[in-house]
Length: 231
Ligand SMILES: O=C(O)/C=C/C(=O)CC(=O)C(=O)O
Ligand SMILES: [Mg+2]
Image (tube, rainbow, N blue to C red; front, side):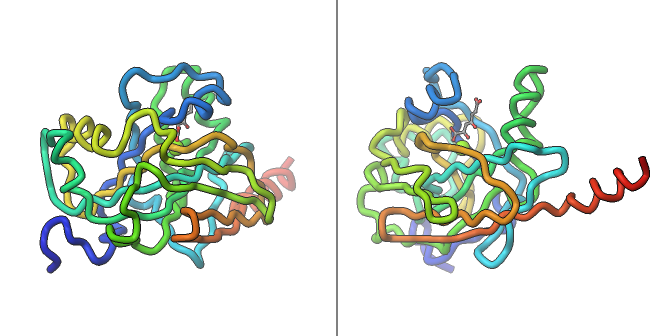
């Protein structure tokens, strides 16, 4: 087993996923949200993970699936009440990640004051790249995040624009949730989020350090056909 803080691989498919929302001013503004004064947290179940070769599946009832490209921080050392000054010692590596969001279901949930679990946590909502070792990203608070849909650029930002930096985020999260080795923290998306439909191909990257592609499919198309044939 690797020494604490020295992960060499990503312990995915079983470790929790904590996500940060509205961590970029321009993204908060594009959705008409206020800029948060402290980190906004939500979570995805571990069944949300997928890897290249699998497809993103539009969840049932969703007619506006959005892409959000994000830097994922992989925890390398378990910690609770982590001091911000020591938080980076708990980082074991990184991944490039997508926080796929059923925007219409999220809007409905927000209106009713309900949780975002379905909108953010449906199966396939967390596509991730290969594990990126620590040494590949000496300054995670300044890396480019980009995303294209069918070859056209939609998102092009930098983690330098995060409102809350990685150390601050890990410290804050760990006051409520013990961060365990292998957990993943999604740090929020820059502006440019938008809709994808069945057949679209999302390609995204972390500068030129990592790149991944996923196709979008609609497994519920048949449900609609069956329903309409009953009418
Ligand atoms: O508050 C909203 O309407 C939407 C917020 C998000 O989806 C937050 C994120 O996931 C993000 O900023 O990355
Ligand atoms: Mg997000």
